[in-house]
Length: 314
Image 1 (cartoon, rainbow, N blue to C red):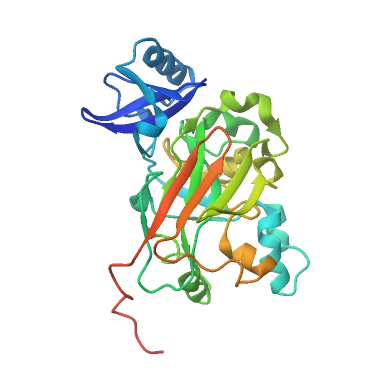
Image 2: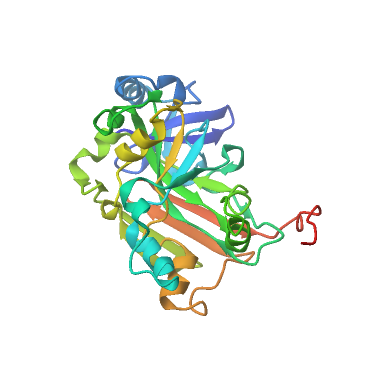
């Protein structure tokens, strides 16, 4: 089993290996897995075996202060689940997406300086009344990619984890009326899940353009939606190839899938009505789970700042 976590201990941050029985073998010294990127995964496997054979201690994962297992250097986020975005297209009078969506991956850059850990609270921006979560898969690039083909791109993936791209929908829609973005509707927070899973760990579950893993969203104890990663229209190999073409994707970069079906309030309110799926509010508790990858558990905190004071009258 090659699944890593990072925990805060009395000796500082430590990498751990998540065992099949749910226990964690904590490293004696290592605090980051990034130095073990750069090859075909051999170094990560050797690290996991060394930690598991001679841990500083073995403990229950539930007793640990879990942190984000990686510290990405950049973040690109895409939109690869067609069933997720169909309600929005239909609300605009379309029966399917624009042609470009089916021809090439559609994405944008986000802000790694605002990444949160899997148990960190998320502060609502003071100028939003439409706070939303987005349940996604994130891939971490382990080797620099420059104009790599789709067939080559898979060799650049070091591992996967859960990603939540928190969204202030009213800010997002307003700024995209200016024919650019998203920007401030997205850059205030994204959360990373607790478990970093290497690709070989998932090999037996390969299906479609992803893996046969269940993705589930829950708010305040009520299940909101679920989907399978395998329902994606685009694969991560295609996302990395497209991102790298005539460009560079650095080692340590985060590539987001975009929201799965049933993975956000916006989609569910379009499908079933806003009364049943209200926007998030301070005190709400969001739980986002993916099989083998644990869960993001985040409580929504009240804003400490209001609207941007520099806004002008049109």
